[in-house]
Amino acid sequence: MIKLTTENYEEQVLRSDKPVLVEFWAEWCGPCKMVGPVLEQIEAEHGLTIGKLNTDENPEIMNRYGVMAVPTMLLFENGEPVKQIIGAKPKRLLVSELGLA
Image (cartoon, rainbow, N blue to C red):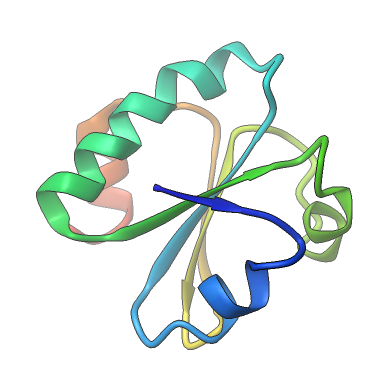
């Protein structure tokens, strides 16, 4: 997983030629800690690029997309958000909602 910051966000997400799933998370968020390992499995099994963005350290990016809760996952294609998933979900649901099944 890529650690996303304000400095590398444009290059890693907006300019990527592959789809990128961005997980908006926070250190204090219990559900974020549950979904992290699930996203690592999805990345390994499906080859999806996944980046983690700490909302406490990068609030301007969170605000840019209107993210109000963590965890929130946004799937980007060609630099544009095309899908949003809010909350921790089981792996099978995440895989299905991301269209990877």
